Image (cartoon, rainbow, N blue to C red):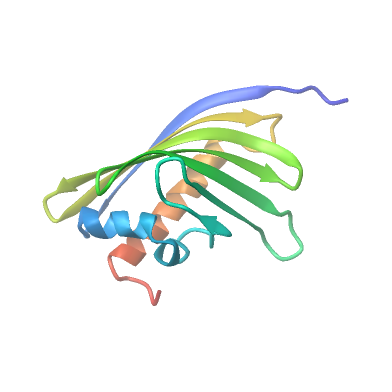
Length: 149
């Protein structure tokens, strides 16, 4: 049996969008809009205690499962959720994520903070932070109207 271990980490990714907090919040809270920049949800119940889950992956590649529970929602200000990420039947990580939306001149500052436990080398904080940056760039293109989406 291979050695089991856990690495804990926190990362913060910030973006400023030329879009109102209302528009950025709507991109998180509406399942059709969120599917344009995040994975399409198999289940989406955006309320405190509600769940969002999805599964998918590249053709011929592993299937990833995202399963989140919303812990706090302050419309147009803050979203907090905890989630697990699995690859097939292997648990890769468990995280708590806080998304803060702050109105600034000309738009919204988004602060994304993730605190995670990453298991047995299946995922790392650095890989997650990189992927989160790409995801938030896609969100920015959508809310700023820079995509065909």
